[in-house]
Length: 139
Image 1 (cartoon, rainbow, N blue to C red):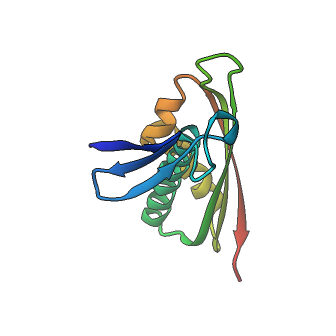
Image 2 (cartoon, rainbow, N blue to C red):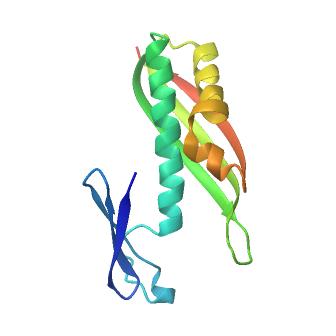
């Protein structure tokens, strides 16, 4: 896997993935940024959420669960001193579908967290990661 980050100006950067996609990152105004993009640490949190949700959906699909929607809401705390690593991350999954099995949803979240989600497992080296979920039945 390769990526490249190009400095644009001030604290604005353009991230380019090896798969050919781009994203703008920027710092907050109090650090010279213009708020033109996500913060780099926000990218880490988004990456973890995307990785976990990808796994959850793949596992539920294999379990023949009829998922029609999925959202993962993430909340993180950071250390007060440098390096300001994540110290706690909570991922709350909202899974919508038809006749979803709570057992399957809970198992999929557990498998993602403990075995498949590389981002969660990596961030879990410095942060306590907790999970929650709710199931919404679509009629």
